Image (cartoon, rainbow over all chains, first blue to last red; front, side, top):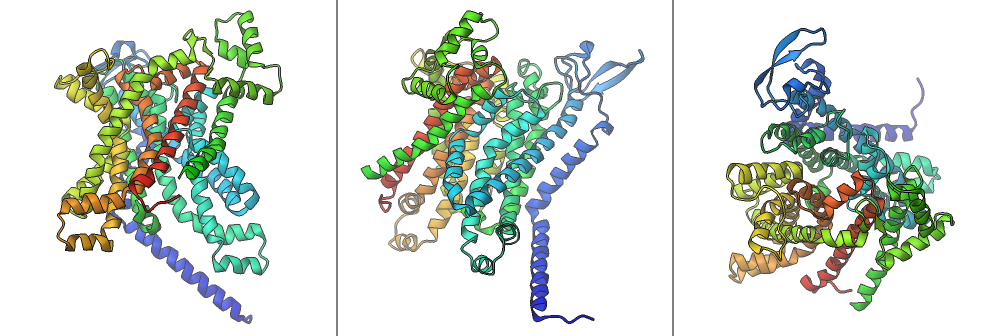
Amino acid sequence: MSAVTPEEVVDSAAIASAAGKRRSLWRLVIRNPSVIVGGAILLFMVLIAVLAPYLGTVDPTRIDPAARNKKPDTEITFHLDNGQTAKRVVWMGTDSLGRDVYSRVIYGTRVSLIVGVAVSFLSIAFGLMIGLVSGYVRWADGFIMRIMDGLMAIPGILLAIALVSIWRTGLVTVVFAIAVPEIPRVVRLVRSIVLSVREEPYVEGAISVGTPTFTLMMRHILPNTIAPLIVQATFTAAAAIIAEAILSFLGIGIPPETPSWGNIMAEGRTLFRVFPHNILYPGIFLAFTVLAINIIGDGLRDTLDPKMSKKV
Amino acid sequence: MLDFIARRLIAIVPVLTVVAIFVFLMLRLTPGDPAAVIAGDNATSDQIAQIREKLGLDLPIWTQFGIWIGDMLHGNFGESFFFKKTVVELIQQRLEPTLALSVCTLILAVSTAVPLGVIAAYRQGSMVDRVVMAMSVLGFSLPTFVIGYCLIYIFAIELGWLPVQGYTRIGADFGGFIEHMVLPSITLGAVYVALIARITRASVLEVLNEDYIRTARAKGLSNRVVLMRHALRNAAVPILTVIGIGIALLIGGAVVTESVYGLPGLGRLTIEAVLSRDFPTIQAVILLFSVVYVLINLLIDIGYTLVDPRIRY
């Protein structure tokens, strides 16, 4: 049996209490009614996205000239690849190329969720790195923040439109174009946390015992940013899903070969007066998904970041 | 005060410089010869050579930037080869619908959101409060174009009360102009109302706990006077701030709203320009919107002193 030094006792007690605190916070989070309701809707959407091929869908890109512009709940004769025909009820109708709107909407869930997750991840990753540097490295701060202010002066969607116009359209470019305008917001958030935390006695203590800068950042400063960043990430995901829908709707986002809620609605624009279903169904899915994420965000903010929730 | 305005004006110079550098680099970052990109697909090699010389594309990049920024500051935004007009003419033609839409939306949104927020704060926890807060979350979650098409479907197609799409110039027929503005303004205003109502509620709630509100009540002042003169006025700074920041949402939303309602404005122009890769127009529109956004926020900063005399610069 090895001897236990007093420092180790203190250390392990502190770690245990910190872990306990984290666990009880987590329990608070999953008991929050907003998080439960929003989480349930979001989980449902995730299941739809994952199980898309098994939900009675057909190839969402399959063009069928004979079945163009059918209203919801019409029965169409479906030509199989082997030459046989089958009857099928298109309960969300078909678009002007005869593609099944139900299948497109179901598969479109994938694009929206991927965009939401990818944009949050990218903007948080870049924002965190830049924000830590800006908050900690004094000489770089001014320069970095001027660039961030400049980026923030261009309205978000407009900056995304500008970036899309430079690059070719596609899922990856759309994700980057939406992520870039979000980065300055994350940088500001992280920087403000770093600036307030670096004055705390425990950080000064760590500096005084000669903790290397990198360790200091990782162990003492970074953990403070986690809760606010989780909240930020949810709101960013919601905004990103809307932004993707807007870009695709305007015809400068994801090309129609990949079904996304935005480009399904774009397809439906010209014949909207006669066939509103092309816009209605993807619109409902879009609204519910974004609503669910926003509700989760509200719940997370109330539990994880009480200071911020008082402000808004 | 003048000193403050001067300092703020100087502070926007680096911000706008970064914007200008980004907009300038846009054309250089896109694959291909910038002169050929500007000239479009049907250009002759003579035309391309002309553009090349005009932009100084053979000179070092800093000199190019100098030439470009000089042109911008002189109001020379170049020529749109796609629309076969100068960019300035193009913007002048498209300015009115966007300006009209923004002003109508701003008036509509502020005049509904602020009272809603004040009432929600005053009756905190009541049914009214919950409805306002729920509507606000909904306003954030429903994309502009979904709201737009729902409104068109209900009020223009089913009920036939208002026109579906299109625009009437304000000088041509004022009644028609208003008719064409109702649905777009509500559509564009939804997210803005959600944002302003939320902040108004939070801001007024904080002020309602102050001692001077209790004093005002104790003096026997009516609820209306307490709320409007004592609470709202003290809560005004965050509300004004969010109205300013929200202009970015308004500009982004205008692009979408104009597309939904077929308004021939700057937002529609932006999309047409992107689809036809008409870079001089894209650059000018982004620059214009950003400058407007920055200037409005500058005006709001200065406006703080008017609503709250405690703020001295």
